[in-house]
Image (cartoon, one colour):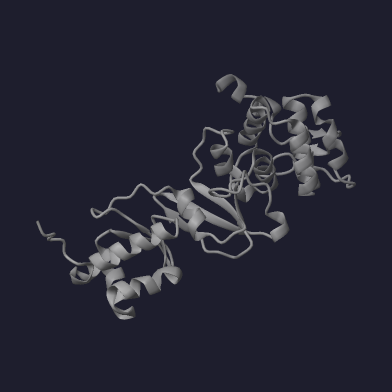
Length: 276
């Protein structure tokens, strides 16, 4: 019996475009992500020209089969408009390397937090615009190339290792992870077998005395003074005290060992052991 399938060239414009974009995304191993600057020529071949390609894009966007993530980047849906694309897979496809997903989202991805962080912090060598996907926002922080290090592995999205994510949480309040959440992450990391020596090694590479002081105080509180001892050499030469939590003013009692203002009560930093 002869096939009654309609040749691709005879199908409606939007359908031809949808099929071409699906094929292209699969060929480039980034389905369901469309990167227009890389895919436009294949789309032109299917539609018959650039003007028709733009017409097809408008149709596909209007009927929900193509959803814009940011300028030049889209996610393909099903023929009915649905999608199950994960944010990190999309992020990996649309973000130039090197980059690093760090802070709260990295803690959650590595099992150090039960919180869901809707703001995803990404270190990037480029100044990139923020974008959102299904209620989650990706926020890029421009960083020098030599500051982007510590990812879990070469495959898949570039997610920070536990020790790197913890350091970033202690560095900048813009990253949105409270000191209590960071303390719990350190506790979990140690219980999961991350040695404090790895934290100390990462802190040495991080080269930020304020972060090393905060980390040292927390490790001493959570694990003990002996475990925190390697961090003493990383406190820096300044005698000026820093805030233990960057979220709050540098006030409250001081700790002379780590030269920090203890502006969060230690019992709050241990509360997860009772409530968790």
